[in-house]
Image 1 (cartoon, rainbow, N blue to C red):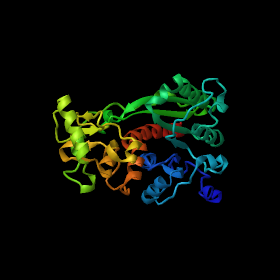
Image 2: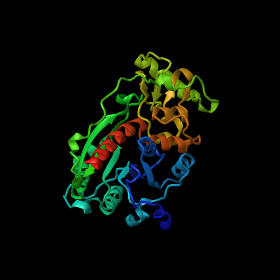
Image 3: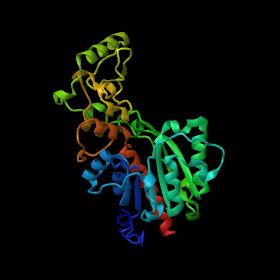
Length: 333
């Protein structure tokens, strides 16, 4: 396996003016789509989920390597940029300012050890909004302390997909960093400005779908109960979610609720188009994440799970564009 890892020619990282990146916790490849659109080349990908590996291979003709904790950082190809939407786990000793050792036992440690060994020019990290207050703020403090100790300047911000013409209420933490010796002014990195929402849910849902997406009579009954109780004005794109006998939530503003990995458990965890008495299809969910129509994915629970775990492609594309702009500027200086 390791021979395959180091077989790619990375002796001249920028001679072809293409920055090289690695795609950690790659999932469906949202980072890859975004960076390839910005003329970058992927030289390594990794994800432990075998179903995600199959989806990735179907779209990029490359099977990602598996468990990153089992891969020696020395065997990963040299690269300019590291992309990682790493899972957020508990940091048992977070905040004690033990530097690099603070993150052992977490998947962020694997990101950090690769950064320490390969010294990429830049990184982009993505996580849930809750990382900012996880562990009373100590988790984020530990991550940022580690990145600083590794020799990187960084900048982070919470961005919501609905503010970038993607009709989904999805707040995520994005962190961009550059190696300090490059002397890139981190304040010169500009997070994208909000856009007017013109791409609404009604533009992304189909007029009908196969019968297997139809909801049960019980689910329909629960929805109608809460429509009446909450006096909901049901439109063509009104969505119901978290539908239970005890509760039901609605989105009536042309924006989808946050799509989560829980959709993979089926049932009423997938948002429901009330007028059509059915759940969103996999293709509709892909559109709500900003994936192109050409993207391939099998139907079923694993597809919904992968989509819920994915990044919003258009946001990553905008961030990648700005990151690459500054790296090119540094190359010319």
